[in-house]
Length: 368
Ligand code: ACO
Image (tube, rainbow, N blue to C red; front, side):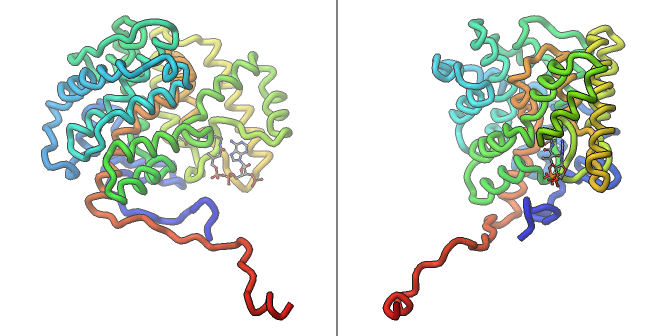
């Protein structure tokens, strides 16, 4: 048995490759650092879904179709009663996604990508006793997400920063949530079931739930000179430093650099609190130093979640919604993997090794 299935190959895919030794991520033949230079999230959906749907629309239609899908899912706020709204944001969003039809056509796929982008800002507003804002189908996906949250059209820099984030997290090999999606898809359940399983895996703090706690740590550290002591105390208590370490990467996560660049651009246009960024950089340096000394044989580097936290905070997204915004980007990848599994794969059904007690043998009982 391989603990945590580390290094076990459980699927063949044409979607993405995570090279943990050289710190490179390839998404359908393009390296992430190149992809983020030109792609929009809508264009990445076409890239990921090519070959997995009978009627995949041309890339030029994708923004309009995704805009229409956002408008369609908005009506599900009718079901957002007080009990649902009181739940943690990710659970409320998941409950609304569960209302979508469980099919596997392109229309359902678009609804599932639109859903976290629309439900997240709407639930956040309802939690603050504000009305959800209806989508504007003509805006870009990222710009509309920010508008549905604040009610204001975001700046060009803000919209492209969120767009770059969505592209950056769109797919990432056989991570825990994508594996969950593929297991469900392998049973021939629909895309909504696969997406709900994936979102449920994503919300855990070891996966997509880490960036909220990254900000909690920054708040608690408060000033650069406290970083080392605070982090050392956390390690002494046996805690993990959120935003560091990865199952596959042994060098820096390339997504962290893609997001750091987006953050740099926002900083240049005066849209990031410079002190916050300075604190984060001190915390990152101190954490890397302490982790290198604690685990000299296990390189523990900054992962995507560290800069996700700073970027999403700078965009005015509250920390309780970070996992949902991650889901808004990763939904495209989950759907691509679910379709790839359903089209090309077999039922995923591994074995377990029984290590529990065995029943009493009747002969032994009689002899006794
Ligand atoms: N802080 C402190 N110690 C760590 C950290 C960390 N962030 N990450 C790993 N370690 C230690 C472990 O305690 C373990 O030590 P041990 O052998 O003495 O028990 C050793 O390094 C190896 O760690 P594993 O648990 O085997 O590594 P694994 O591959 O299972 O975990 C994970 C990867 C879950 C990401 C881990 O590094 C972690 O918990 N990081 C913090 C949470 C986080 O940032 N998650 C987001 C990941 S990115 C994403 O999912 C999108």
